[in-house]
Amino acid sequence: MAMNTLPDKTVERLSQYRRNLLICDANGKEHIFSHEIANIHHITPVQVRRDIMLIGYTGTLRKGYNVKELVALIGEILDNPDGQNVAIVGAGNLGRALMKYFTNRREKLSIVAAFDNHTDKIGTSFAGVEVYPIDQLKQIIKDKNISIAIISVPFDEAVNVAALLVEAKIKGILNYSPRPVNVPENIYLEEYDMVTSLEKVAYFAKNKK
Amino acid sequence: MAMNTLPDKTVERLSQYRRNLLICDANGKEHIFSHEIANIHHITPVQVRRDIMLIGYTGTLRKGYNVKELVALIGEILDNPDGQNVAIVGAGNLGRALMKYFTNRREKLSIVAAFDNHTDKIGTSFAGVEVYPIDQLKQIIKDKNISIAIISVPFDEAVNVAALLVEAKIKGILNYSPRPVNVPENIYLEEYDMVTSLEKVAYFAKNKK
DNA sequence: AATTAATTGTTATTTAATAAACAAAGGTAG
DNA sequence: CTACCTTTGTTTATTAAATAACAATTAATT
Image (cartoon, rainbow over all chains, first blue to last red; front, top):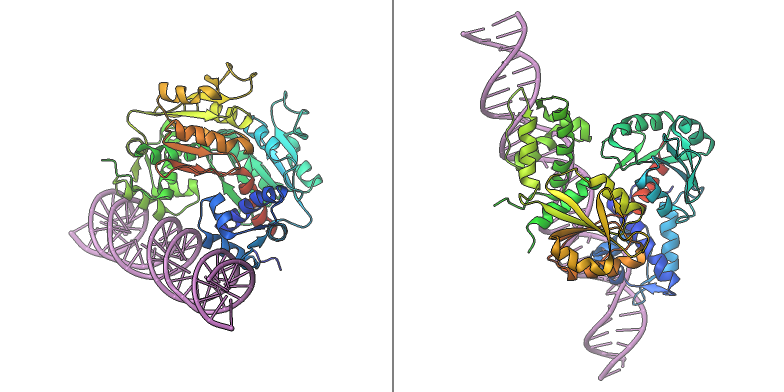
C-alpha cells in the first residue's frame, strides 16, 4: 500500500501544511478551514482541498479540518513508520546550519552522522551530530542504516561525494552543492542551488515598481 | 526593453547554464552542444535549445554554441546593467553560509550588508560583509541602495523582518525561514524551505529499490 | 419550516511546462 | 557531386499543475 503516486508539488505542500498545523495545534487550535491554510501559504483554498482530497481525508462541513487528525494523516503519508536516517556530507557553514536546523524536528527523520575531510572538524559535533572522516562514509552509512544524504560540499567535491553515496547504496540525495551530479535511476535526487534562487529573485525584482 | 516575460523555469535554467558555461570557458572550451549542456543538468537537449531560442541566441550548425557569447547574452538577460545590491537578514549559520557562498560570485550582484540582533555578531564581518543591528535596516537599505533581501532568521522573527523589508521598499525577497511571509504584489517573493525539501526526498526515497 | 450563507469534495477547464517531431542547413564520406 | 549524418531552430503534442465551476451538505437565521 502507501501509494507513492502523489504529485510532486502536493508532497511539498503537505510538508508545509504539517509544519504550520503543528503550530496551530500547539496554540490550542482544534479546527482549521481550507482558506486559513491557504492564506498561510499564499495559495488558493481549492488547492488546499484538492491536496487533502488526494490523501483521502475528509473535513467537517462548517468546522473545517481537525488539526490533530490532519497532522496524523500527513504523517502516515509522508513518514516512514520505521523512521529514516540522514547523513550530511560537508560540515561547513551550510552543513552546520542544516544540522542545527533539522535536529529534533521530526521523530521519523533523524540526522545521525556528518562527514567532512578537514581534520579540525572530524571528531567534533554540532547539534549533537558527530563529524566523521569521509573515508568512513560507506561503513557508517551501512552501520547506522542511513538511507538519505544531504550534499553540502563545494563544487569540486560534489561529483566524488555523489559517487561514494551511490556506492554506499543510499536511496535519496538532496544536493545543495552548485554542481549537478549524476546518479542511477533507482536513487531519488533533488538538487537545489542557492545562487540560482538569488539570481532568479534578482531577475524578477529587476523590473519591479 | 529586456522583456521580462521569460518563464520561471527558463530563468532558473539559464542561471544554471551560465554557472557551468563559465567553468567550460575557464577550461578553454570554446563551443558546446545542446546535448552537452543537457547532460550536465539532467534535462533534454530540446529543452536547452528551447531556452536558448527564447533569449534569441543562435548557435552554429555542427559546432554548437559559442560559450563566451552565450555567457555574455545570459548576462544581458539576467543581470541588471547597473548591478543590484543584496542584504542578508540573520547572520546565523545559514546567513554566514550564504555570505561566504555568494561573495564575489557575480559582478552584478553583491551582498553589501548583513543584519542581526545578537550583540556578539553586530560589528563583526563574514566574508567581507559587515553585520549591522536590525534597527538600522531601513536606513542602510536606503543608503546602500539595496533592492534584494535574503531572510535567514528563525521562524518567530520572519514575519517581523518581512514587514521591515516592505517598509524599506525592498523589491525582491528570498525567504529561507520556515515561516511563509506575506508581502504586497509589487515585491517579488521566493520562498524555500529546507525541511520541506528533505521531507520530499524522504517521501520519494521511501519506496525506492 | 424555509431560506440563506458557508464550506467541503469533485469534476472540468485552462494554463504552464516538458517532450516529441521534424524541417533546414552545413559538413563529411564515398 | 551526391547522399548521408549531425545538429540547430521551431512547431506541434503531451503531460502536469493550477484554477474555476459547481453540486452537496450543514448550520444559522428569520
